[in-house]
Length: 327
Image 1 (cartoon, rainbow, N blue to C red):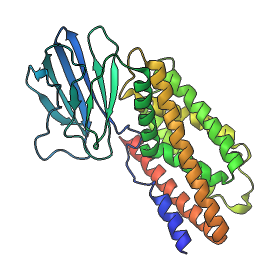
Image 2 (image 1 turned 45 degrees about the vertical axis):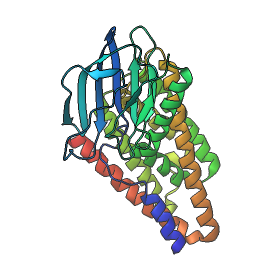
Image 3 (image 1 turned 60 degrees about the horizontal axis):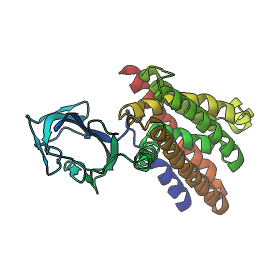
Image 4 (image 1 turned 90 degrees about the horizontal axis):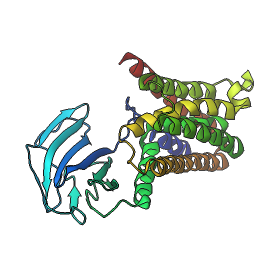
């Protein structure tokens, strides 16, 4: 029973119950130069609840100062702010930071000097400041968007629950790999098409249908053993492909919240997608490993644990579905 409890605990770690589960956690800060020395800075800092005190403004490079009033307000679960900034000389080598950054969320910082490529930095609560470099490096963009992709799949609970449910339904490495490959190809296609402006779909229906896909897989897991193989079990890659197209629109909507750097759109999109896949592979390996260990040491605990997890996943998906339709 200890093994069963461990399995259940691992599954429950993935069920936080946030209704807006597909939103990217990172905030953003953009500092753009409109004329020589004249900059505009705008930022969004996600917060779980309204601040109780004054939120510190972003930290500017030493040769920059605020040239207007710093305007900040709490809107839609985040601090939104903007201001005019005056800088003397080149900002390269200066420090830009967000002292108020805390918790698991990250901050994507974009610096847009006049007539130069945009550069991208990623801030965290551990490292809430970065040194502004010279011209943007493609490797810098790749690294930043790769980590955002990993962060999104590991904290984008609806996509994560779909992948976990798929593994719990198929349970064996070969069909899981085939289904995961189909899911990857499909959501990569719609992610790229939507991010580049070739495809579009309203975000609210997408979010509701993603929740419905989770409920669908939970019901498939809970089918009676003697009911015979379902369509999903007979053709798992087809179902994964179809739902993958839908989830790709969800990824695109989340990525659109922070944007893609001008001049580096393709590398950033590629890095984000690779980051999503890296996180997805880690989740699949972890769930398969847990199932293998429990099956080896306590076979009866496997079925009970999977059913418990399926009920929890299905209830969470149903809650998201109702919430997203009702709003």
